[in-house]
Image 1: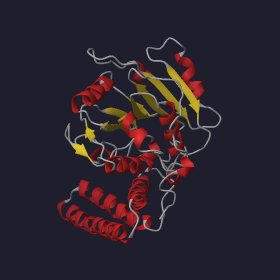
Image 2: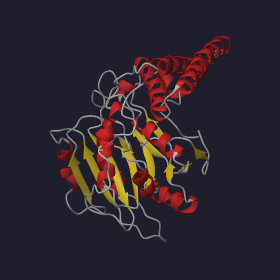
Image 3: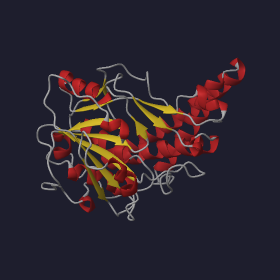
Length: 329
């Protein structure tokens, strides 16, 4: 929150920015943290409790609260933004005319993290794309979404992903399918504090499995049918086979990065296969920093921006229970 209050705005633009905190803890634990900021902050803070547990419900509430804003910027509650981050993201939005602008997240490891974390990119998405590159998907950890997007793709976040994650993947796959442009901005980088529980190989395996399963379930929800099942099966099989290749290369060449890729690809492929029958891992049933690395976000941060920054409004929103993809495969 401190880093968000220190953000700079483009000198040649007129923006009204506010910070919305959606506390996904029915007891309202975020209020104790926000009390220290008081009323004299550069950007006003609005905090609400979303008592229904699960990340999709917190994200959907964020959209409702920013329904009349020109854009909504999603960041996670464990992230820290450098002072120029917001300005860079907004400038990219202006210059590209994109509907969605997303940037990388670089993890800061805790002291004593196992060595493999330092040569793996699992906590670091920098350098994966170039600025201006158009993508087919995005995530809500560092992303600006234009109002026209969440007005058109509604309801947004599927309740089937309550504890598993991937509701953002499912949403942005639908956004791309609807014809909206998703653009990368490498310079709009944000930092993330990695909890100890997410530095273990056990967590890495579970994350790979969960990601693979979430990808499969997302794609089958969007486009059910025999063709999709065949494509998913082929993709999952290719992941498993490529994992064997990376493992052999890693052993023969002595490259630890290849061995890590082998682990991630293998369990991602297994997860993709499991997703065909709706099996996934409830990674977010527990809170951040738990021993197994789970982390149901107690607060999701969403920033409303633009001259239309408004009070709570849910007009035009379709109920989450009426989601167009109502069933898991």
